[in-house]
Length: 254
Image 1 (cartoon, helix red, strand yellow):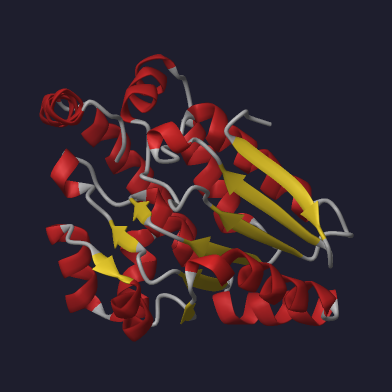
Image 2: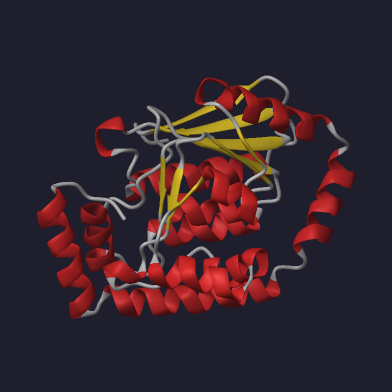
């Protein structure tokens, strides 16, 4: 557990993971990533949990990585970063995943939704993947998943230009299931997750595997992304962009 991640068992066999770091717009630290990784693994190992809901708090999903924390881990860590461990767990999680997105969904806040089975967003949600702007590359398999969802031309625009899109555009592109008012968003996501959890688990799991495929190509794409990400992260250009961003904004998110 992390002080900024609340994990609770809800009615109907649903596990709720909530990001709660309002002073930093729910920007993700290594400890937060580890807590979410553990929660997803716990869900897969517990037969009483039939679905997981991932949500933010305070009108924000997440502003992405806490860049200061991320850089500290990158400079000292051997092996996978906490963010990388979370992404791998996210891709292999067998329990159905539902996202409730309100406000900012930046970087991994957007790409994690590509792994969710159902995604609901408030009208004011903003999705954006500014990796290139920070001298980095896409992550969480987004370079593989996004073109297959929206086509090569649109995926290139979103990943290379890094421009944001709102809930209406996300719905039009088929990246979310519905737009839900903020006061009903979490309740709606929990209700939909409860419906999934109530279905025959074997049939639901088999259907999910058939929809997603065996994941071999996704895994290869994620490995390639992670190698390129680590190389980019170590580059002087990326470090200069990170430092300029931190100095300019006074915050730490990506």
